[in-house]
Amino acid sequence: MTMALLTVYCLAALIFGYLVGSIPFGLVVTKLAGTPDIRTIGSGNIGATNVLRTGHKSLAAATLFGDALKGTAAVLLAAWWFGRDPALLAGLGAVLGHVFPVWLGFKGGKGVATYIGVLIALAWPIAAAFGVIWGIVAYATRTSSLSGLIASAATPLLLWWIADGRTAFLFLVLTLFLWFTHRGNIARLIAGTEGKIGKKAEAARS
Picture: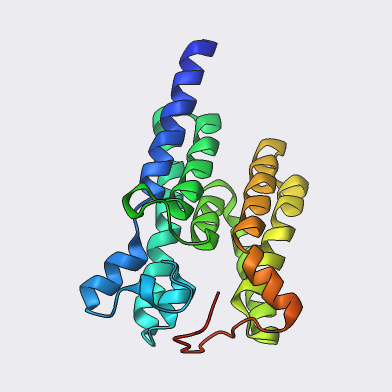
């Protein structure tokens, strides 16, 4: 494969991943269920944690599944069409698309579920480890954001140890981006005002 063709493939994979990641599952499932616009509830973002604040666990689960699936699908399809390295960029694009969806004025979710979906496609044992870490922290603290932050921090280290350097580097970038999208949560964690899992707070913020 020539460098020019690889560049085209990488760009195509990045754009493809972004468009797939931009699909707003949280907004779609809540609209279909007839709930108020998810963007007017809680934090206003379209992710599963905020959907949970509607009081509908099934909608939150559907959102979580859809947001993860688009990350997995973007990577696997890009790998099939373009190869392994472009697929890494498709994963990056999927997370960026979820956080900055073109269809919603670039105002989306915070990227955790799509991050996990990309991880499933590239290194599913590490995705399982992410889930275990998230579950332990969530059980102990009842705080979704803290669980995601700690699990994501461990992910590049585990990938570097078990998988390969390129995948580890991708997730280092994605983890830093995830922490950036959670900067408000981090401030509230420090202040002790972060919302808890399952809290139906119309005024809750996450």
